[in-house]
Length: 275
Image (cartoon, rainbow, N blue to C red; front, side, top):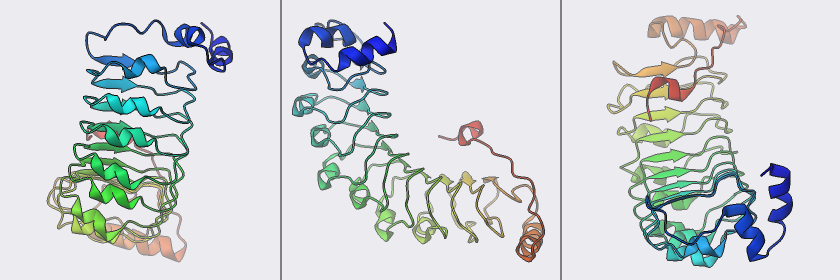
């Protein structure tokens, strides 16, 4: 079925048309995984909410702007993918999914999160990249088991001190925001393994050599005059990443005086094998 046909049918709310888009949802999938990605859906079919043993639900790349309250009946759901949709408000039904581990909400239109999100005590992966956050959503600091946080490509200017409460957090992705300084709170989180502040507005980087758990720091595409000093074995991606620290300081001084910076080479984080 072509996308144009799917798109037209998606506007028709009848059950028959919904079955045309998603198929006949009568039996629980054997692997307890339901993938309805890319179906041009504008509402979640009620039939998808009756599979109470469902563990993974993929709803990416649709046109969803809300979710029904019946979703909260999926009490055993561990993974929910809602990236590339049209959500402007966080669906409260998600906050009742107490077993949820992984939540993908990237590429929507979210600008805040509800306080009820703190009920997701088992959540360890939260992707909120490419949304409309201008302030860091404070409720994130109340997710005690969070290990991976992706807030890249929003409009954040700072991070709250409360973030250091997340002692399980290992990777924080903040590329493409409006940070003008390296967030001080990150220096108080020595257990972090991955820090990505690519494509911000940071001019000076502090020493990160005390961060014993650090494995990768990405700081490319910033107007910086120095590279962060890191411990032995830590991979850096950015200007002056491969030279000795003394050389970086000299090059930084030249950059400030007007000398042209070295040629930048974009390196994707996944190329380093660090998740």
